[in-house]
Image 1: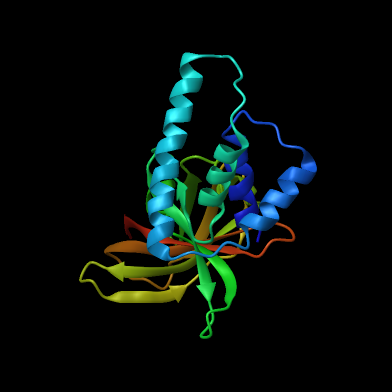
Image 2: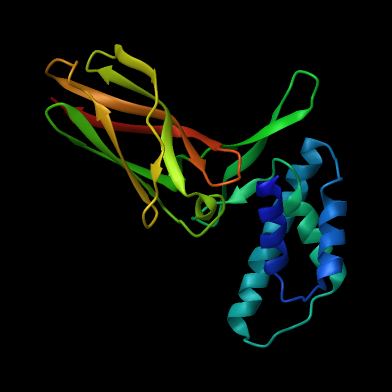
Length: 225
């Protein structure tokens, strides 16, 4: 899938090592065949993240290009290219991560992105008959955000001051992303007066020729009518 290929590409780019196109293609093909226990994946990812931090520190101290051994590059590609491996969030810590969507028989039928709460900022402006909702990517230059062309709310609820859900399982249309931001309109003309809360549990991002990616998390914004 596109997400796995992006992870492999980012991992290779983290090193100052030049691979021939044929070598890169063969390496990518071999990596995608690898299967290992979840616990082992997590241990390897943590180790790889530490290596990436060390590599960044070395680059800060010296501007010289140093050829890294191919074995080291292959190790990083295997770590980051594994299905369901955690992605780097903007804070430099392991936060949002890709996850396989599997069928009852274990077959992979898609990909989702989990724990994106800290990577998307949400704000609302209340008007007489609608909410103007703005979603902004904290870092639009990292995966999967830079791959999106359109973005929307996949699932939201409206909750009143007593905790009663007055609108549930609702979604918005996909809208174009402009400089890492999207703005949606949510109708609220059917609500009475008082204090309410917008609760979003998932967004969805899309691009041409790619399967839409659902991103889960928890976002809440209060508003008054």
